[in-house]
Length: 61
Image 1 (tube, rainbow, N blue to C red):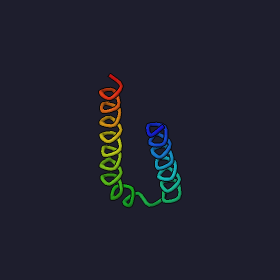
Image 2: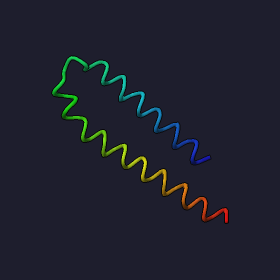
Image 3: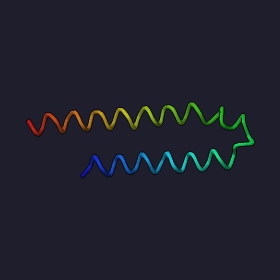
């Protein structure tokens, strides 16, 4: 259940960010400024998700 919520949250963030990028598409430099922030956020999401699944696997064993 936690996993599903996390995936939905991640998809929602991606959708919101995509919409935001569409709105500021003409402002290229702004994308360059937000890109590092976006990649670090995604890295955090992925690491949290992978650690959650690993702990869940240990727990089910």
